[in-house]
Length: 363
Length: 277
Image (cartoon, rainbow over all chains, first blue to last red; front, side):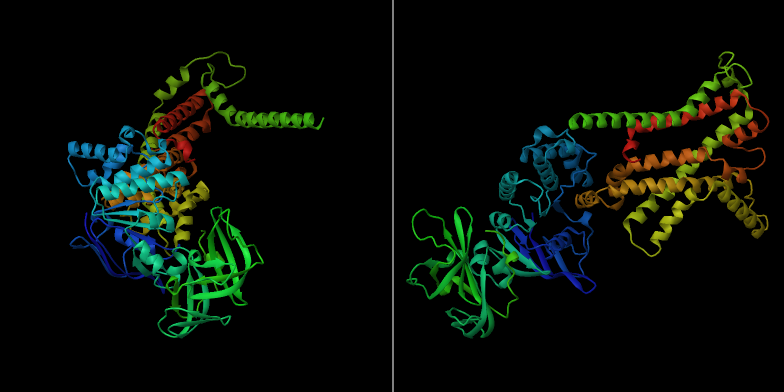
């Protein structure tokens, strides 16, 4: 395994940048996840690493080698496709052996390594089957074995779990992570599923519109989102729009004065994590901010409950509270108090677009 | 009551379907069956009812030099034309399915054209072209009535079949498989040989099969392109029929039917042509 570096990697189609100035450094043995909505450039980036898309500019380094202009078959990457892409006319053994065969590995050694690789994914007994005789989860594991058997410099996973049903997805997720750690594989995975990304990655890269928005650990992204997009895409946020009057005071469109920790004054947006918003019948004790509001809408999620609370004609926040048998349980129309601390709100400069509720990922 | 009527209607529908299918099968099979039957008549004049049965006519055609030569030439032509058609048609189909270029639609239609132009027109056109070519080269290119000229015509007949059927199987071919192969270290040629070709093989074999049959049975176009003393089997049959009708013609037809049928069955054992066509 090796270190993977992308330097200012871009792919342009006419005026459209599918990926723009993507710079990443993946350490040897690290599991990096590229996360973003469809069309954000994550797949383009992965395919540039694999050598299927030639970058318009920038560089791909694998270990000590510049592989930017190398064709796919001369790069030592192991790619697991979303559709698995097992060769239908070859047996499981032949599929897994393909990479070794291309590398002219002696037959005896190849046989042994194929057996080991299949053992690794616990499919040693199915080597003589054809892919169509396997279940989806088994095909997925064959694809994994096929990508690992020739000891690639980097393992690439393209939405590897999206074709599996929910239960299987959990299993394969654990399995991939186990293998990755046991073999200390340098791994880059592409996904649009944030739960998948958060549970598997060492570090995450959030992309949107071809650009890297933020690189960091799960905690970095959640606690300190770099911009509005990240705040809205990783976890959930509700936004208050307004103006930063001083670095410490944010004035909402509805006229509320909110204490905060901002930087440059001017138009800005404030992101609040729903579970950090406190809701009480009386003024909130110990909160830096406290506003009266009215519950507009209650969304029952089972263990949790979402409250949409209107603070002013122009300001709505979402609060998430645990569903307890005892205690305070507001209904639509109730008057409540809403509070949050300065530390739990993120302020981003610039005017926001009108928030689109469909952009919120489900809780 | 309604339930009963519904059942009745379903039963009638099923019977009607079966009857229609049976009639169609009969319509297709009847000529084949009559030809086979006729080939075993003992008498020379094919009148009904037969006076008796014999395999005499198969001996007669084996002794008829024109039929034997015709068969050999037709087989040679069919095999060569198919081989050339594959060499041209498979790459052409790959280009058509993979690349977007100006004139792609036009090329697509041109490659299909020999199927739609009547054989007589195609034959005339080629013959005129051959004459013009010989005049233009001052007789240095003796192509009129040559085997080369005949073969080039047959290649034209074969190509549309191969292009069509290979295109059809390429449409169902998952190109991710090629990327997977390249990712595993296979260069373009190895990928084609090891992954693409096995994937589109049913289309290639089916195309070759139909192309061969089209060339083997071609009469109209060939009439314009054969030279003196060299005739294909369909032409030999036509010439024979001009002055004589006896069961030997039926016997020749049976030989053809058996040859083509056997080729179909054998290829279908290795490649499921039925999946493509």
